[in-house]
Length: 370
Ligand code: GDP
Image (cartoon, rainbow, N blue to C red; front, side, top):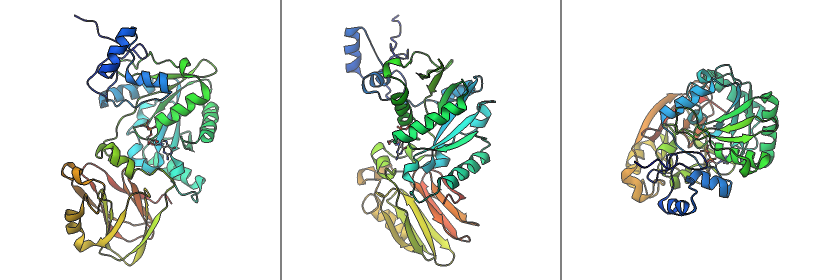
């Protein structure tokens, strides 16, 4: 009999049960809001008061509707991905959804990769990978959402490609889209100018519109969790530990066949067959790498996961998924990628290796980035 209470910011129906869904408001905040006759959902509250955008996770169904809408617009589409987790951050089938609209592929978190890497080479690499996925971006841009100067440059490039159109920013969670949008808000508009009232038709998703100079908008769309990311398996604390925060210092290991590397207790790399050779590990500097003999690796893991091999922490071991094994033969210089964690570069072709990751997390082989 009661009419649903709506957020006066975005119009989402207020609910106090699911933090992950739109309209969430903590009980205490709801009471205060009711007294003042202005109820905001937590997301809009934060946006208003801290100039901070929160992630809202959505169902596949809503995300599909959102994607379907992209094709009906005359707009520039910005697809933000995490270059540290390319495979985990591509949106499957994006090229089918965008219709004839141009796409800018923005590879974020470039600050994490060693400074010695050539940007031109990496851009080319990204373009090739995008083509393999069927995406034909008009431009590929490397950036770092945590660097204001990079964001200024990005805005200028967007303005160049926009040609008087609206801009839609899309990306899966954890690629740094909120960080990027917040920087853009800081550069272009005050929080009070933001419009958060409209929704994507047929969905429960809020959109945030940042006004541009010519009356058009830059529109932030909610992200979706990619199923095969580490983010799906690990808790927030562990994710912080394994996700690189600073420029990665690659670690080189000379291995003989029959040797194994453990990455904390979250991943494992076995060198199965080949001559003595070097492997380069690109993972968070905080994640300890432990070298051992392949024949002893199973036993070591059983005994030491949660102890010597962390994360997971000891109290999380019971609920931590088992590691699942994938075998690969490297025919060229290749990377074995652990989705969301990093990768191991096999520097010369002809090695047979195995990569292990928690059940549900992808391990793949790809042409070497570096
Ligand atoms: P979203 O889920 O796509 O909105 O991603 P967030 O903006 O919440 O960022 C996810 C994580 O990546 C956070 O820990 C950010 O601090 C971090 N992050 C975002 N952009 C960058 C970047 O350019 N460089 C680095 N090193 N970290 C970033």
